[in-house]
Length: 342
Image (cartoon, rainbow, N blue to C red; front, side, top):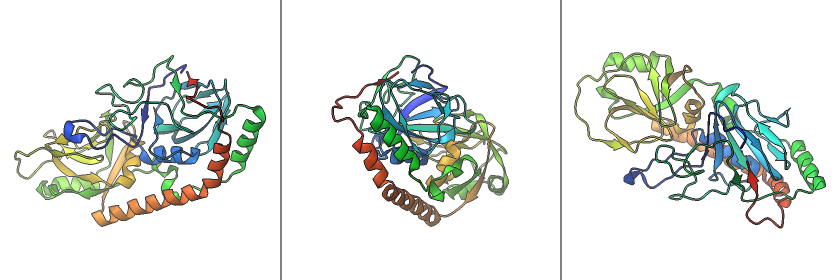
């Protein structure tokens, strides 16, 4: 690792099953881009990827590997040559990958075939920054860090060149539900909560008609939204309830907060509802100053959208099966614990 970027952490599908102990789920902010990076490079979708935020790192590779970049357009270059997103890329030992700045979107995801050699903490490799565990030493990457891979490719030049050419000639058709659409969309579908009727009519209209702006107070824990102040018809004390990714809370100050990957495990604020999981990547790719609008849907619609997305992932896996075999055929037969990436 030569330069760490603004915030580069390892994230997987999340640390599930421990919220009752007060442990946040964490995981990738944009789960679609995270899953795509793994799927394209031939991994199971629960392997950790490197989540890169706004300004990316500079990486020098000490071994041959196959990687994939998805999500935000970080203007990535390999040895000063542009790198395509959403495609498997062969990297040779000694080559340098740079990701200077997000041209579109906020978060990019880097997967490596075979995954990163990181310990499991409570069943997950995700970095929990606030508690300082998981991922790489419980923190964001820093200059000088060296992270091992689980696998390495055979570094014979003729094999790497053949694999690189084969992968480049392979056509990849991304279903529309899995493409880069989340970088450009601003309408977020959501399901109303049982406390929605308790908000004043003016507040309900404001939620539906306002173009909200992501406030400066936005991070992996939650996005505060700037816009009209929302109010309840009658203020009352509430019991704390479990939270989830996409829960829209309204504190006493009246500015809604959408809870994100590093959310707290419970909360007692009134809730507008929850963002449909299919549209969480739209939010994850926003940064302070970006705008969003809310579109209400019902639970059945949200479930149907989620099913369409899952079917698209399954179809893509079938499409990529032969390409994955080419990558596996190039894995070094002498691989033991992998090498390092500084």
